[in-house]
Length: 292
Image (cartoon, rainbow, N blue to C red; front, side, top):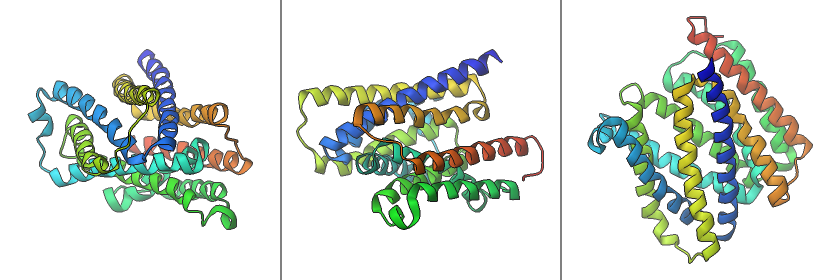
């Protein structure tokens, strides 16, 4: 119980750090090319990944060893592309709306877990998924913003991250966590470098300081997230991941002058409620209960 309690508090702290990272990303992407910002962020992230993976697997060679290299490389490239899409969404929609729509990704994971992983999703969870997507439609405002490319950028990011999450679970059937973590950082860094060098822009001194802070918060957040899952079960701490949206909303309002529209508040409430329900049903089903 004490470990779970520490894991919960550590998860909340991690979400605060990730929200800070989102705010810094929005600032830098508003001044410089998104791809360059993500590329530099990935350089630091890759160094962190190499260090952690080598320590956990015994060596970098052990961490890199996999029987499914195409899948692992695709996962890494997919996550890097998703980060670019999400940061772009920050500049188009702001932190609040982007992360509100992104909060739908657990529902997309649940909806796609059947066709991709062969998992059974019962009628109760399908109802919850449907309610969650009603929340997404409320946020998108059918007839007003539903055809807005900016809104679909955030939804695309959520879909890409859901697919990445499913492929990570699929890869875990043969590869250990250290291996998947290694390929996430290395493949992403290589891919971003091959593309990002063509978008290089000179950066001011103060913004280099913000970039350094972005890299530090990214590595710190991922390290703390690893510690969270060492202390507590994922099902116990995952609901507290929604604190990232709460913290980012505060940053969006206080730093960037964003506002929380009524449709966003209602929609995200439905999405979070549906997401927590699907998480709970997954936990019940995992305890040898019928999937419903």
